[in-house]
Each structure stands twice: as C-alpha cells, then as structure tokens.
Figure 1 (tube, rainbow, N blue to C red):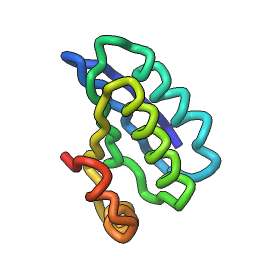
Figure 2 (spheres, one colour):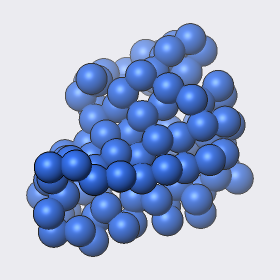
Figure 3 (tube, helix red, strand yellow):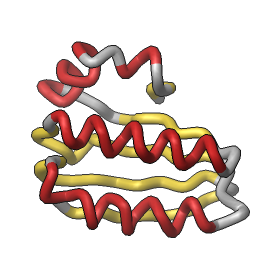
Figure 4 (cartoon, helix red, strand yellow):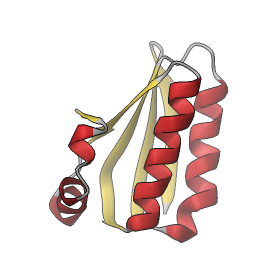
Length: 101
C-alpha cells in the first residue's frame, strides 16, 4: 500500500492506494501519527479512492485511528470509498461510526 499525507487549513489528509490489509499496519500508522502530533490539525480525512481491497484488519486500523483522534480532540472522516471497499464499509456499519465525505 502507498500512503501520502498532507495538511491544508487544519485538515489532514491520508491518501491510500493499493491493498489496505494487515501488512499495511506500519505504513498507515506512520502516516496518521504525524497528523495526530500536529496541533494545527483539527480533522483527518482518510481518502480510500485508490484502495482496491481492504480486510478486517484495515477496519480495525480505521477504528484505532478514530479512537486516537478522539483522545486528541480531532475528528476522522472517510472519503472516496467505492466498489468493494464501499461494500465492506457498509456491511461493517462504518457509516454509523465515521462521517463519509
């Protein structure tokens, strides 16, 4: 999986591409840790537009990010979920846990 982060006007963005699975744990955490430590970042968007596969461990990683963000007063939203990725998120009821933009 490839990760790319950016910050614009207090909004952090984590763009992901490829397979989002257990092997992506370190890359995903490294990407969002920098945003969690940035006091100027108030919200984080996880852009799944480039993700073609995610599994249950990816769902767990998203939940861990949400919990960590909550501890620092930040919010997390999911963007550009489509195809089978969107189906997995819908089946897991992630629309009740995250904002989708």
